[in-house]
Length: 313
Image 1: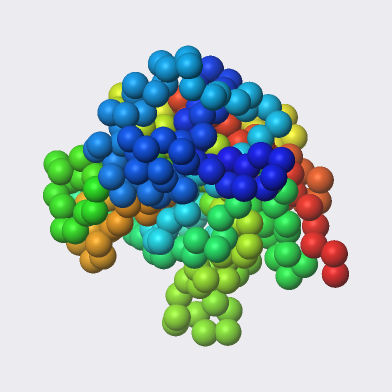
Image 2: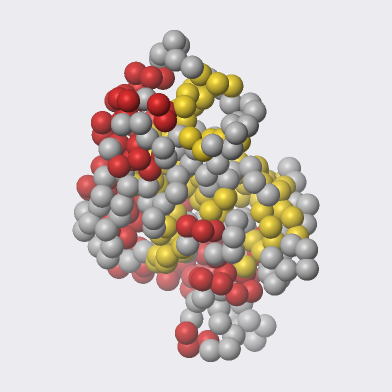
């Protein structure tokens, strides 16, 4: 999605640094949002292929347009603890001071736990709020109440065909495209201190406004040969923090989509965030601060750049 000087949002096709406003293309049903395209994705994709090579259309330079979040989902499914090294890093970072195990013992215990999870075939997923989504180049406001803001760059699957109780073998047929999400987290709020028995609190820790920079684009799944072979890279002020292949996932994209669909019907435009690789702030002992700039890329999906701004108290 894009917006010009008049502020009007429109779905756009990007090719060679140019953007075609798809809102007036009758062959696509005159869509006003990207989700309109995803609702009829099988038909739309063939039309988009033809449009990409049509030089007679009114293409506009990408420069000068504002890049908005590429889609407004109805549902956002997020994955936790889905990269082996990431889980090990977090487990070691969250160890209590009175843990009697050595670092090597703790690491071995976590590795055994992940092997067990993989064998039991049970991903860990939770629900995010679409209101947390912001554009790929928008500033991220760090709330005054957030003590430990952290980054989590993730490969994200975008649903095209509705999916309900699909098998892993069928799941990728329901994925229209892929994009990038930075699933920011208030680390100090994940676990409830007032009532530990409740467990995790994803509402407070994940869903502040702007905590999910998304995009810049939706890249059709047909152009992503192997979602299990992409490099996820995030730099902070030019220093590499995350740089890991999606091969390190415990559960791949197909398994995540299938798992989510066993409970809920995934709808066109919905997002399935597939988890964060190693290299978060908790691992480095360096969390987000006012003025930090994050650059995130996933192979073939473009790049996002977001600047952190402290909320004025």
